[in-house]
Length: 179
Image (cartoon, rainbow, N blue to C red):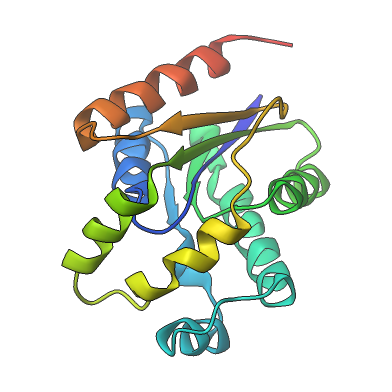
């Protein structure tokens, strides 16, 4: 069975760091979701304008297809993207299944308190997603509850190492459980 593991959550939760580590631990390809935003999305976010659903659909489709294509010999790929809403997660699963019917999509949703993320985002430099846009992500955020294949991981003040271990344990458990 092939696995597409999507590490998501609002900006500033450490999904890129966790996703990169997970891909190393699982020895599989890593796809950074921010690299696949069209320039129009980057321009909007750089100006502090939140993305709409319509801004996201083509990006999510492309990113999912790239992730599925990356699976290759490893049988697994890790992708990062915000996947804030249930309908985005459902769309990723739908596109993945259209691309590869036998695929299993695992959603690992990192989330945290607004103040903790805002503080972290205020300290980082060089990213187009500014801390001033965090509220729009929290307004849109639907933490997974009883969604098949989706796991919510509350980060709190845990270290990236601890979060990485938790994510790895969940991934390994899911990957060794056969339907």
